[in-house]
Image (cartoon, rainbow, N blue to C red; front, side):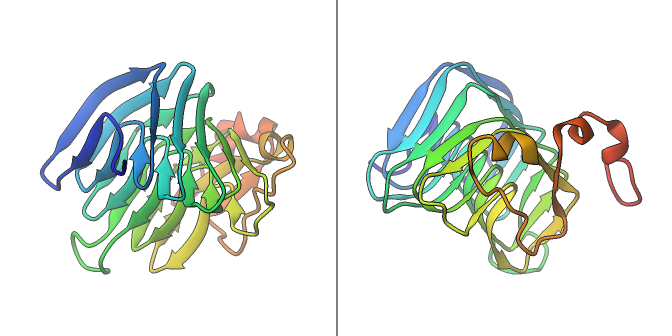
Length: 220
């Protein structure tokens, strides 16, 4: 079935705050997430922990640790997926992320962006899908601000669309001050490359633990 999660879908007026999901499994086709299969609402301070599994079991799209498909004017803020969380999909799927599978807006005006800001993921992503990343697998018309990834994005087909922060930058995105740990990613023989996205920066573990790495003009 599609649209699987604690909530199948969250509307633009929905607000979910201060929630911890611990040790669970969610499986389905398209639009699968630990919290919601689809969201256009506001999600703040929600955490995923414990030995938890979010997976797509058929040739579906949009699998994320927190939300499968994020649509405008949806916001995900101050959320996390922990180190024992696994996001998994089978061959023939697309859009897999440690927090969000696919994030999509409708334009560049007010309320037309979706927003992912001030979050982190330490999840393990295991997939042979296209468009894979530690935070969001595929993004368009999205504000991606001050997030970090310190987990493993292990794309078994070695696709060029595997990244530390965003798998495929479709365009019309605002991407600022995002970081990922290159040593953790490389440990799984994954690419976790930055591509051409200057604001999705790979730094080593020591730098990830240093406040100085994140304090700069316009930064955190």
